[in-house]
Length: 493
Image (cartoon, rainbow, N blue to C red; front, side, top):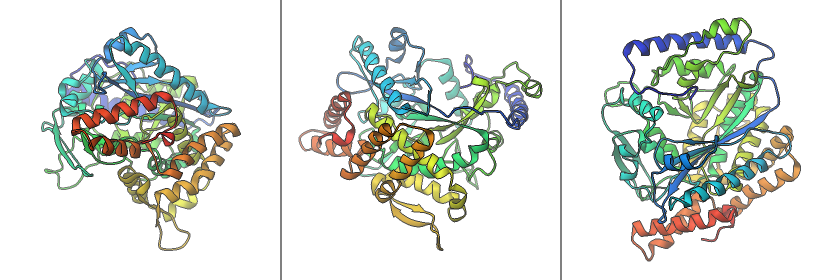
């Protein structure tokens, strides 16, 4: 969020005023983006890691405020549900060893957080969805007692009076309802931020959209929710449905979802995505600041664009445009699709593969797009989330018809050298590139992602235990292996 949220309820007049300020913010953004030197600078990487807090039995423990009070670290923040925390990593230059720096910071953060958690008989772990969750763990009472989250809940429920309905296919199909947005708190991700110069934004963003399904297929770590074996990356389906305020029964047409892969290729630049968020989606948190953004922009300053950043923060695209007034102002792409876990090394490798492939595809994206309508990139994303390495993805063909189906496994193998080349373009050290790509290659060779390990381990535990105890058994095995720091392809089943 662009600023602290200290209120929970707003009037209709405040919603109207907020929309007026959004239009002013867009006008100011257009002025800022027109400057030839805006956003120029070194490429940097940042990240946010969402975490789960569990008890001695591997089940959710809602003590995030207790840990935050005890663990003094400005990089640590509360998250939506009481068993969630968020750790914001220090931005680093993309040159040299950025991913090893990210890995080291993650290792130290987890070690330090777990020392604090021990005092509460708890542990902090990175995992896409905590498999031991029950419906009670994600009921309304799970919401973190914090104004920002109460306001977000009220804003979304303002337009949806009926319960949130969840339906996800899989080995154990799931149908359930939730009374609040706390269902979304089951999802924990590793979000990567890539700073992008405005002139490169459209090509880089479109390349990220193409690369994301390929990276997701090799990174899955969320196969179980509330005891049900579902998608390889169940977060993708759950996140969309858990925040879906649309009334699809009453509508004769399908309005766009606030959680989406997007609605088309970016043709000119970042402004399109901000303008779409304002035009298509009604405000949820109409908190108005004091600045005259247009005047500041016209005077050569860098406005905060508080209202626009709040609005953008409540439209959850899997790749999201970020405007940041810091460091003289710049743009970033927030890559939101990667799951948390299983280990810091796995997360660093996932990020390196996605970022490297994005940069590699950027130079050829204009040649790819005519043979690759956006709907097929979106199709790839959901198939990769559903089936992981077993997915059949689509890729543009040089001759008609295009696109053509290719196995996800073959696609990851094909693009490993390209991802390495993209990292070289950024100036990443050769040794780091080889090390991280070997992690992805190791997963690919034996077909073991975090999701595959969880499924295999759960099936083994189910041979001797009832479902609830088997989930706890699998969770304990996951925690023990995660703490070793060894990448998931080296874990024995």
